[in-house]
Length: 612
Image 1 (cartoon, one colour):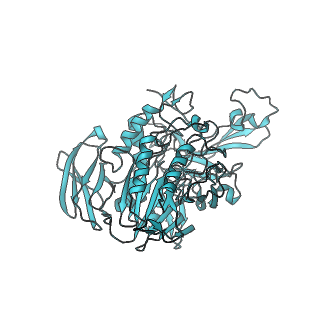
Image 2 (cartoon, rainbow, N blue to C red):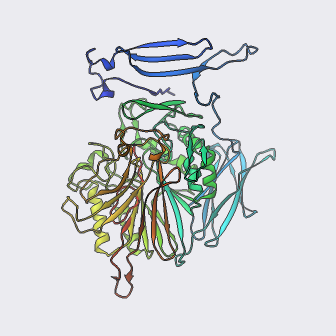
Image 3 (cartoon, rainbow, N blue to C red):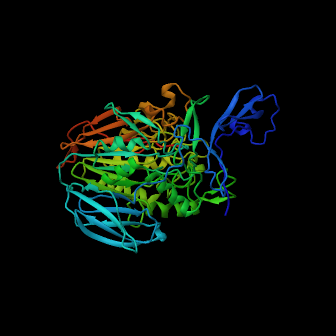
């Protein structure tokens, strides 16, 4: 057992780029300070941390909890001010039963549920009004279960509901959910979906007063507003590209946000989350916190999802075998593998995943197949990513799977849901977290990417696109051999579309790696609006929060939109496929691209960026 504490504000030599124990003289007066506190006539406590020049470095207004005097066993305790709510901590959830669906195919679906009464229960699944399945749930899985439902008809809408029945016969019902099964592989039909990443990061959680006026002129208030906006588009399914929890970050009751140099405002979290996850129950609690949002629950009940993960489901920029030494987040040295195992169990329990979590693909009609790689579980250490020799991102088995899948797919569009970008640099020297490393030479993980790009080119594979996220800004990236500086040019141009965050701090745009000629066709981040590049702006600056929407028409055109959480279209692109002559396997048109749903892009990738 240990108690972990976290900084709401910190200012010391390390904060300004000096050594932690630098012993700086008072000449560096930004680091000299005293405190000032005042209590008002009405009992409010106002605390200021003040520099010796008189400037206020940080301040906090605290409102007391007033206890009923008749209760002599209680005392008055000061609490963080929920300045804009004036209320006590809100409950994590108000629903009796949580539900969601995912991994939808033309004949099956996974339906996950949790009995929020946290009592041993019989869980029953009803499909179109008929009881389909039941099981007993208990604390071993934190009262969760995922049902596999198969034998379904393609392109068919179903409704479902889950019931939790406790020992005394009391039944608790979920809201009604729905889903539509995928079209068959030969069906020439329109398909649409959204992709999203980076939820509740950098301390920005569920704010009951957060308000956005959407593109229809309606004001939407409270919680994770992005899910209300995505639900209005009625997508057939959603790609969740990772960082859907921030297990390595607390969500304090209030947090100041800045433009990089000065405080712009205070963001209020209610409910809050005051821990970093180490134990299994703490990882589970992160999922419960996000799933408790009403807007997220409504979206998940109506929209099947495909779940990937990135780093923050475990800890920032982690890799297998890593040992976190002297991290300010943890007590002592911590094995990333141990955190990984606990996080993985919680991820499987709290998502519509039946038993294992791995890379896979799914077909949606004649024109679309989506590939879901895992860039996190099989990678070599981040510090090796600048080596002149191969550093794995996917590993040889997964690379072979992706090559075979792209080559054998008869779908018009092959979309790679890349939860880390291909061309955009993430991390920094010694900790480059994706493929790029700010060096024009092809190094480390870029050698694996080079192998994949060469395979696509050599085998005449067309219409590959990348959709990505992770970097906390919005962008359209293009990889091109005409601009490549790494000495390798035998690859097809590739587009990558980047989104995010959907509700977290915003950064960037990041630096680009030019090995494969990556450049921005569109970019929107704090720097684009005149803020500091790494400003970590709150969702309150909602022009920098985004998700992606893609649709494939009956005739095979791919329409990609990067959309703000208010529903406004920030950037869009319509792509016409390259059509091959089946008899000669030759191109009959000259347009087309490779699409990757992830970060960087080459052929044509939709890059949804999540970072930090």
